[in-house]
Length: 108
Image 1 (cartoon, rainbow, N blue to C red):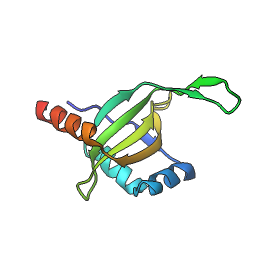
Image 2: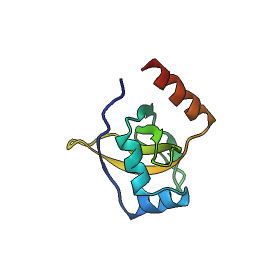
Image 3: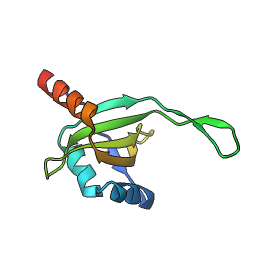
Image 4: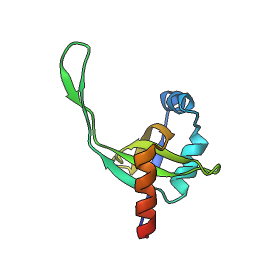
């Protein structure tokens, strides 16, 4: 069984990142409404310009298809207290993600 996708939010930075990867907000919504699989993504440690480090929060990847039948990966933040998740970016699924999507879909 697939998990429920939270309500999604985005901003102009998100739109720009999606555009860079050839995607739109409509593509994101297509994936969200097509019962995607959700995968936990641990936060990464990032080095800052001043040499310090900070840990990026955990995120989720939604893997699913858009109306054009492209398999996409949409990265979102974990839901806030109001049940909303911010869309971080998106892209075409890679080889590993396509395999994981097929494998998890076969189970259901």
